[in-house]
Length: 560
Image (tube, rainbow, N blue to C red; front, top):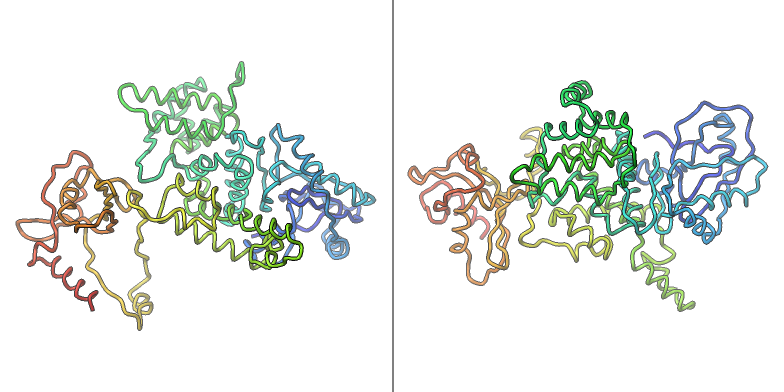
C-alpha cells in the first residue's frame, strides 16, 4: 500500500462526524507535481482505524489537492510545526448538512483552499458548511473516491451502487476494496438501513440465498437481443463489438452513451433493480424468452452512464471487480463494528443521570471508551469478522443475518442467528497440503482418526419439525428430489423422540448384487428430478460389506 499523503500547505479538509479542520500554515510559491487525490479523513478516530487496518503504524492521512503549493521538504517541516487542529460546533455542522440533503452529493474528494493568513475559525466554518448528511452515526473510512449520497429514509439510488462499483474496480488491493465497500455499507446503514439487504445482494451478485436455487439463467443471446433493441443496433453489430471488447457490459455502455432520448425516464433505484432481477428469474413458460428481453429493455432504457455496464454484468453473474463473498462479509463485519453498541448509549444515559457514579465510564464500552481506537478498535474488528463468518457458516442467508445485525448489532448476532434444520450449513471442506510430510508434522503427538474416503456426493440431510426431510449438496443446492430413496429410508432410521436433526454424510452408489460400492460417475448420472425410488443402502444392514466393517470399527473407536 502507498504511504499516507503528506499534508498540504493550505488546505481545509471537509470532515463528517466530529468536524475538525487543519489550521492553515504558510506555504511556498513553488508548486509540486500534481498528485492523485486522496479521500478526506473524517476524524482522528478514522486515521487510527485506517492505520490499524492497513499498516498498523500511527500515521496520519490528509487530502492532496491538484496543485500543491509547497515542495516535499517544506511540507515535512510544516507537518511538524503547524499540525494543530480545533473542533467546530457539531450543531452548525449538522444543520448545514441537512440543508443540502435533498440532492445527490459526492463525498470523499471535497477540499477547500484557504490562504496562509486565514484564521482557524474561517477554516472551521468552511469544513462544517460542507459536511455530508450521512455523518450523524459513523465516520467514513479514508479511501479514494466518492460516494453518491441521497436523502435519508429514501430509496438507495442505483447510481450510488454503480459509483461504489466503479471506485472498487480501480483497486486491486483487497484492503482498499474492503475499506471502500465497508464505507458504502456504513452509509446505507446511516441513511436507509431497511434496504441494506438489497445492497448486499447486489454487491455479492446474488438475488436469493444459495439453497433456494433461484438463478437468472440468462444466455448471451437474450442479452444481445435486448441491447440491440434498446440501442437501435443490429444483433450482428452487437456481436462484433462484443468480440472486440470481450465484455458485453462495456458494449452496452458504449452503445447506450451514443443514444439520445426525448425524455428522461425515472431514475433507477437499487431496490427496483434487484426486484427486476428476481422477476426475470421467476419468468417461465411460453414466450418467457421475449418476456425476459422486455424486462431487460426496461432496465437499460432507464440506465444512465455506467449503470448499463453493471446491469448487464449483474445479469451475466460476473461483476468483474474482484468482489467475492468473503470480501463482502469482511466489509459488512467492519461496517457493523463501527456502529455504536446499545450498551454505550445505556452507559452514557446512566452516567449522565448520576454525576457521582463513575462505574459506567470504566466499562469496556462505556461512554468514554467510544469511539474505539488503537488496539481496542483492532480487537473489535477481528471479533466482528470472526463472529459474522461463523454465523454465516451456520445460517448462510442474508435474509436472516442482516435483520439480526440491524436489530441487535454484532454483539448479539450469535444469540439470534444459529443452526436450525431447513437452512443448510456451509460444509467444512478439506484443506490441501503440499505433501505427506506436512500432514505428518501437523499431527505429530496428536490423537486423530482416519476415515475411508467414499467416492460419492456430499449429502446434508435435514429432518424438519414437521417431519419433512430435505437433502442439500456441498454447494448448498437443494437435492431433495434427486434422492427419493433417502427420503423413504429416514422414517425407519430415526429413533423415537427425535424430532429434528442435521446429518452431514456421503451418498454413494451401491451395487446390491455384487455388494460393492460404485464410483462417483455412476451417481453423477442420476437425474435431479423424477428419479425412481429404490431401496437405500444402510451399512448397518449389510454386515459383510467393507463399508460396514469400517463403520463398526469407527464406532468401537469412539466408544473407547
